Length: 430
Image 1: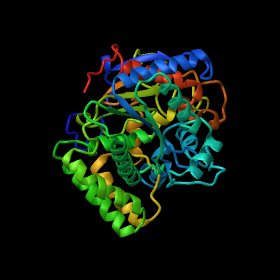
Image 2 (image 1 turned 45 degrees about the vertical axis):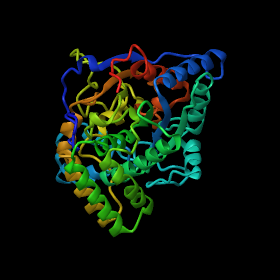
Image 3 (image 1 turned 90 degrees about the vertical axis):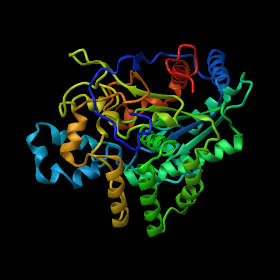
Image 4 (image 1 turned 30 degrees about the vertical axis):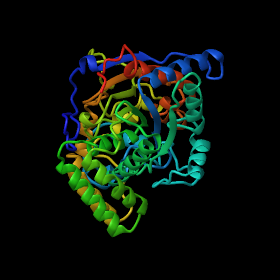
């Protein structure tokens, strides 16, 4: 997307991304608690510190009981009620694999449900229920922080940030304000300047929150930002809920207008398994990298696209055979449903700003594009080799769980450092 993107949606282009895409296979690394593992992470931390990284935020949500595929919207609107899906062989089986009630991703034993609060009680329950499947655990963040700090001349602050996991436009807009306020406070606490960098690693739908953040941070005149923030403020004042978001909005809006929120520091973003959806504003970011669990299994040579035509993936999806099916299927047109009428009206108003597609037919059109790579930034398509044959969705979350495994921490960090903070990096410094 262009600089000054102004909330334009991503294109679902099947064209070859060219030199923006690279392919990898997940490689075994030394155990984190071994000397070799500690040495490797220390080297990676030193390299990051040398390139000015002062803080790393690990942003994630919950997948249990949160309507991960956005089926509520597909069920309540568009072609399902009018029966369009019945004319497509296998579609009902695919939709059953996407619904919370039938896909094995039942409600969390811990009892939490969106909107989630970023408090220890919730994150501890999430760690207990999901462990390191699609979840940046406390252990992941602690191991990372301890490892990168060993030989670094400057400390890298590591922060876990749980977003509300409200998978709709209103929920993501609120989450973007909360995250901007968190970034503002981190920048102030660390006293960052124009030679410093803040890195955000965002898993899954948290990447959509970062895409909104990139548009909100734009220094260009933005009619979209004005409309989005006015809509959000009107909803918050009318609903009388989420006072913290209203406070965050009041704190960040003047700094967004002035371009001073990060005090000149660059914001780098890495997404893991984020569906192609909102557009990114490249002018507000330092470096941008998208990592997707992907197996190039197509027979037409287009290895940058997800395999197969929908809905004939119902045989392979239960064992995550083709990679990350959440990234492939949770695209424009689907979403969770807001709880009340006031929220639904605000969500609709935001929908008109950030996304041109709605309903079953549009969702099916977007999903059938099989797009893996976002329009902006570098893209790493990685075979995480997580198709073990298990049909238990909790084991692999349909290919969406691999990124946050503690066993992949060293591999992920090495790929991030190579792509963003080394002489091999193909992205220009900013």
